[in-house]
Amino acid sequence: MSDLVLAIDQGTTSTRALVLGRDHVVRGLAQIELPQHYPASGSVEHDAEDIWSATLATMREALARAGVAPAAIAGIGITNQRETCVIWDRRTGKPIHRAIVWQDRRTADLCARLKAEGVEPLVTQKTGLLLDPYFSGTKLAWLLDNVPGARASAEAGHLAAGTIDAFLIWRLTEGRVHATDATNASRTLLFDIHAGAWDDELLRILRIPRALLPDVRDCAADFGTTTLLGGTIAIRGVAGDQQAATIGQGCFQPGMVKSTYGTGCFALLNTGTTAVASNSRLLTTVAYQLDGRRTYALEGAIFIAGAAVQWLRDGLKLIDNAAQSGDLAARADPTQNVVLVPAFVGLGAPHWNAEARGALLGITRNTGAAEIARAALESVAYQTADLLDAMRRDWPGHDATVLRVDGGMAASDWTMQLLADVLDAPVDRPAMLETTALGAAWLAGMHAGVWPGPEETARAWAAEKRFTPSMTEKERRRRLDGWRRAVKAALLFAGTE
Image (cartoon, rainbow, N blue to C red; front, top):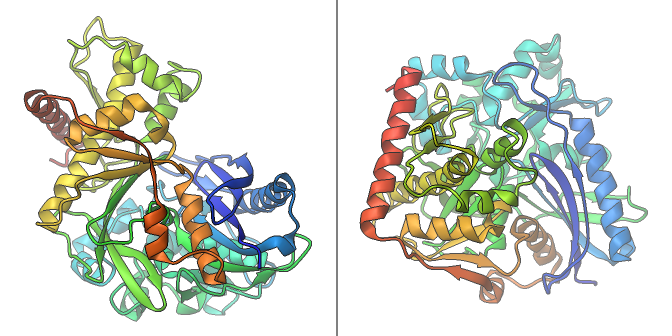
């Protein structure tokens, strides 16, 4: 059997497909940007049909660019934007509404009501999550309650639901398979991460019919076959994007941590077979599930990372492309102490405040584009520092000595050096930057028996560059203290501090 794998990387801003070999060389790559829809303040949607058509088109193009036929592919691996969810009609395969994106805040009132009813401790104990609009469960409840006829159709068994991976599997298998993996299931507010199953009590609280939900399988498993590419290819691996990146970074040992800088920033600390309960408002989640055994992680989720650079480009028109942000920031006046709190859609870990909004503080008459760009990039480093501090508190004695980074922002030397300075720890950028797609590919290739297991894969990981801290402790403390005062000011403005 060939060692080539076709990986689908369905993200927030684009859909990509890559053909990779076990040598981690990309043979073919295709990408299509994903239109964003903002029907109301705080609402973010994707058209699931756009996602499907882009997935099929990029798969075909990646195969063509690689110059290989479907028969040469050992398996398909899928990774996806995790908490984005969709409901579709089993009879037609058509979505009943646009997919609601993980950034969407429309269910904030429902989450607040459930918190007031004292539900959150039970939710956290079973799922490792907090009651926040970020997660899929309240989005599914909103769809059932707000799309005419949806609840009745769901209770009659006519509808199917899931995160984007489940929708793609359904479409690829032409409705033969309705399944997801444990990592995506663990982000729904409906899945008991200790029992490894959908939870009836949580389903009752959110009024979600069990028949709506997919089967939950290992990350490396049989998810059916597709014949839509001119031949039969098995779907053999699935993981949510951050868990896929954890795998792609070779973080298989407890204590290893990776941080992905895409639209948001997500840091995962492997805690092995122990589901560490957080006292710092981090998330306890499934890192991956292989051979029926779950490995857990502590996760810190930041909603705005690369999206702050997009704001510089699209909102403020300060740059023409994202790559210019580091050069612009490097020209900033070092005597100005401008701080951006990028709470454009609320604050994630460790604050979890859906009402907070962005704040720009410390501006003077001399503040210009360079200072604002620097503040945007610095905010990512400061938020990461908050996450790693929380991880140390939650799991003492397991400090990560090195942070492995990936995602679009990781390509910026200026930003990664700043990150190392603020964290006072080395930052390693991998030789293979396509870590999310690589994780999905590894799951499929390993399940097909043509890629190596975790130990060999971990040994093969290589750094392209290491960034070592050079900032003085006094300067580091000054900057972090300023950041924390700015966050407090943003929370005060929101009326939640």
